[in-house]
Image 1 (tube, rainbow, N blue to C red):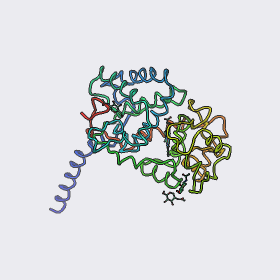
Image 2 (image 1 turned 90 degrees about the vertical axis):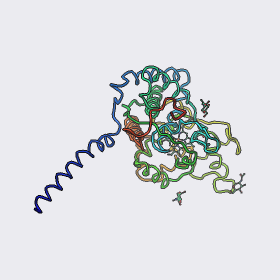
Image 3 (image 1 turned 90 degrees about the horizontal axis):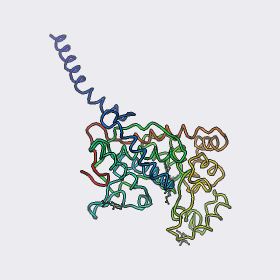
Image 4 (image 1 turned 30 degrees about the vertical axis):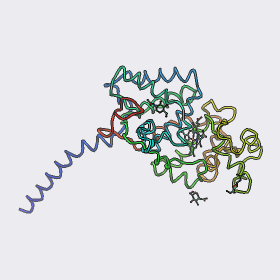
Length: 329
Ligand code: HEM
Ligand SMILES: *[C@@H]1O[C@H](CO)[C@@H](O)[C@H](O)[C@H]1NC(C)=O
Ligand SMILES: *[C@@H]1O[C@H](CO)[C@@H](O)[C@H](O)[C@H]1NC(C)=O
Ligand SMILES: *[C@@H]1O[C@H](CO)[C@@H](O)[C@H](O)[C@H]1NC(C)=O
């Protein structure tokens, strides 16, 4: 009788597993390359053509688009919550906060979405479109190309308060490592993805305290190259909120390993860039990329971007496929 009872339990357990496992698998399976192969085979091509149309005219848009993807993934996961507009002024969206108001290129995402919707309405998520446009924009400015895993779904919530989860330019290495670890990203991902600063610009206001009043005594960060501080002061006055400077001077439109040269020469623009010299493993990576001609940066960047693209994704039946990226359905 006891043996029969035990067998009964085993059978029930097996049945429960059978029912639960396919569901589990669909979620754990998560993203995959070619998710839209059957449902919208032209999607990736349409997105690339649309992105190319914008980037060929305005290559400088690649940088804010790359940063847009990073911000989306760090706030509530890569769910396109960053793309949502504020609809109730008492509850502002992520988009309407200082770090995200610096972003540009929303029109590229909207154009890609509109073009895809025309061919396959209601199939391709805004979160996947952002991931694909980002890859295309980076590769179109001679950066690396990687296979984008797709199958993300769009979130329904965008809350300005959540942007506190973004790293700040004043963050130290301990804090940066902690913030990346909290997203399942390694110390290597931190040093590799920081290489995104090889393109684009920064507003003076993101670093004026560092060059004018680092400890509150009218000083500059002593860990910065003195000539670099002088050059930055010539471009940026203490309360300047509009001027922009190139983050990788001279090659800020080219996706290359030049960023690591700058960091190694104590010319990292933010404390968060210089911080990479304060940890033995990130420092070793900076030195390695700055010194070797055959840099592994492109390969590493591709790997880390795929990992970044998996942070907190909604899959399966979670979330929506938005009709317009700026609004929930
Ligand atoms: C590690 C922590 C990071 C911090 C603290 C940080 C901070 C910043 C800041 C303060 C700016 C300048 C914004 C402005 O003043 O206009 C900036 C720009 C930028 N960031 Fe980061 N960032 C980080 C990581 C990343 C990552 C992981 C990526 C992408 C892989 C990225 C890509 C960019 C790009 C491309 C720009 C230039 C944007 C433009 O040209 O408009 N950043 N970042
Ligand atoms: C959404 O917000 C952006 C600013 O973030 C604005 O330019 C755009 O016009 C808004 N879209 C709509 C349809 O209201
Ligand atoms: C790093 O920053 C964190 C948070 O701002 C702070 O608590 C910590 O003391 C800092 N660590 C070092 C070594 O400066
Ligand atoms: C520098 O920082 C100190 C302390 O935060 C502040 O009292 C002072 O007004 C600042 N000076 C300038 C020029 O901003």
